Amino acid sequence: MDTLTHALSGALLARATAPAPGPAVIPLRRRIALGAMAAAFPDIDVVVSLGSPLSYLHHHRGVTHSLVMLAVWTALLAWLCTRVWRNDANKGLGWRAYAGIIAWGIGAHIAGDWITSFGTMVFAPLSDWRAALSITFIIDLWFSGIILAGLLASWLWRKSRHARWPAITSLAVLCGYVVFQFVQQQRAIEFGEQFVRQAGLRDARVSALPRPVSPFNWMVVVDTYSQFHYSLISLNAKEAPAPLPPDAGFFAKLGAPYLPLSQAKWQRADRLGNDNELPLAREVMLHPKFEFFRWFAAYPVLYRIDQGNPSTCVWFQDLRFFTPGRAAWPFRYGMCRESGAEWRAFELLSDNTTLPVY
Image 1 (spheres, one colour):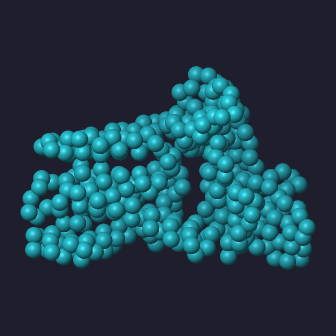
Image 2 (cartoon, rainbow, N blue to C red; image 1 turned 90 degrees about the vertical axis):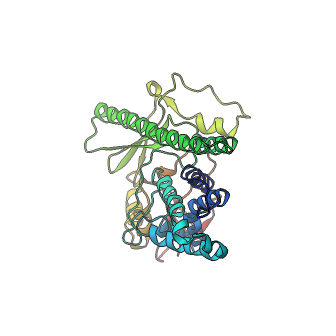
């Protein structure tokens, strides 16, 4: 989830849980600001991307997003608050006064990332397993809008003795929205399972990934281990969208590919390409220095093989990040070698330039 939405969710939680004013109570404005900063804090790990392309994959949503480390970050940030507001110590505002809202903020961030598809290492550093419910798109304007509405309503009723209730109501609506998304995901999975039965596919795994613009837009993925079948569907559409005009807007382009269930189209993507591509693709996919991609990718498929002079390159991508309407497809990786040389790992950027990953 984007950092701004995380910060807003922390501010909303801080407002919803704010006690009545008193001498030993954090001032409301400070409390809301702290909630926002605490909820944004875990994304401080983006600085690791400055190290190397692999640093981002290995460490983003790692220890700063970990339930195991939650108490450590809470204690550290609460102690820093006591250093910033030293004069408040005589009012009874020790580190424990700050710990609650900081823990709520960081916890909200972890939960907000958990419901997306990227994956969050909630047990880091003990485990690099990534948890992902995949029920909310990474940027969901409806999700963010519910939070904003709650904050705005709380500000409008700020002088009322019931000023907390708009924030509490917004949190309840937000939880309901996430449950609604889960229900839509199950509907999308049921559509995929119906395809599996009709196609006679055996030992297939069905999943559904949220897509932008609408909570009804999904990509259903059927994994048959050697290949993927996927379909872009809209669960509430009755007819296909009209053809886009040349000057169609950004959101129109993002929402156009999703078809009603009655008109859904299934596409196929091979993990290792066709018979001619298979030997090279398998060699690269199983290469020890390509282990990082095997660990990271949820739906790895061959993108292309470049037979050049002097280098041969084999590129893979992850269906998880396929979003029609976007100009670029992130997290494409592969390996290249010149004749007689060893394979080297690279990232393929959107402009077709390459970046060494080691």
